[in-house]
Image 1 (cartoon, rainbow, N blue to C red):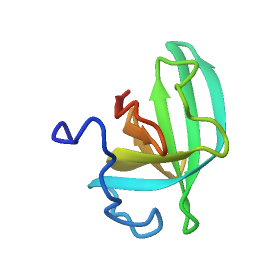
Image 2: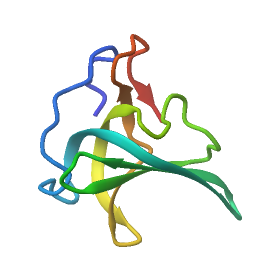
Image 3: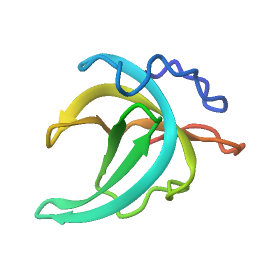
Image 4: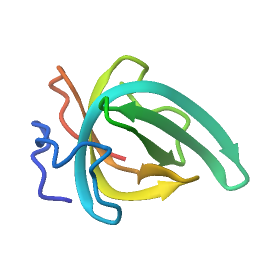
Length: 107
């Protein structure tokens, strides 16, 4: 996953509904919600992102906030798709915010 352009988001490889588990994916959509949870071993942020076909949860361990990821923002996520609590999930994915010049963020 390290071969991404740090400035330009890659094109989505699938919709959330059609993305294959345990494969490297690039997914784009709108942030629906963010939730911070305190665990025994540290915090985590869960960001729910929908592309209109389904919702994926981007989970960022060891963080209480994720810059720019707020409800209503558009984002592209990249990582290996798995599941968390029965839902499609990406753990510490790369992300690009739509309409910004900041480039990729490697969580």
